[in-house]
Length: 223
Image 1: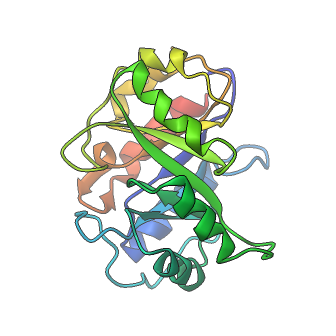
Image 2: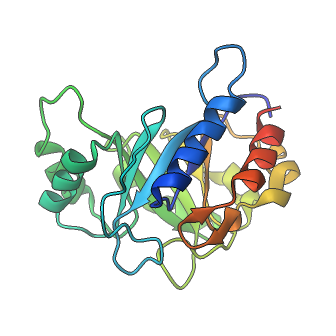
Image 3: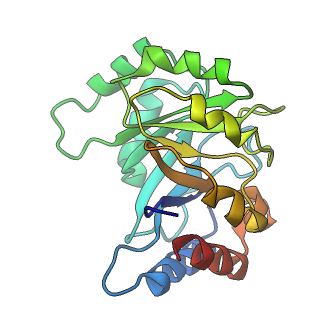
């Protein structure tokens, strides 16, 4: 790949596993570079098998903490941002532009306000049309596959349609990315592609990541 992609490992909740993934990222950083796993995601959606019910005894300090929400009350999102000291908020439901503007008022003026990611389910190039109303409101889009759930289905969409994305907002790629996808990822070429989101294909159980599987994949991706 011609540029260094941000890597997000999502669906974390076990304290020891959090430590292991964080340490892995530190180990893989070369010559003082930033740890390659830049973000760690925590899912605050009760219907997810990776739902964070209780605050883990350990949270990462060397990567950005991302809270994932689905059509959650804005004030509850703000409460979780404070409780978990979230660096980023990922909105993975049908949140409207108006909702995002309201959310922004809850930490307006705070220099440490979280950055925002808005997720969209993609199947065809026409699905990128839904992103237009969100331009300028969030820092990143996240493109996930359509499935039975709003996310975490472990399914891919046809990545070739990414060439039809003509927006101005950088995007993360999600949906079923696994250990065998390095070559396919290398074939993607888009100036606004900023990173990848890893989850179910690197698990031994929901919410518990296989560190060795992550190690091999991340090493290949950052080469």
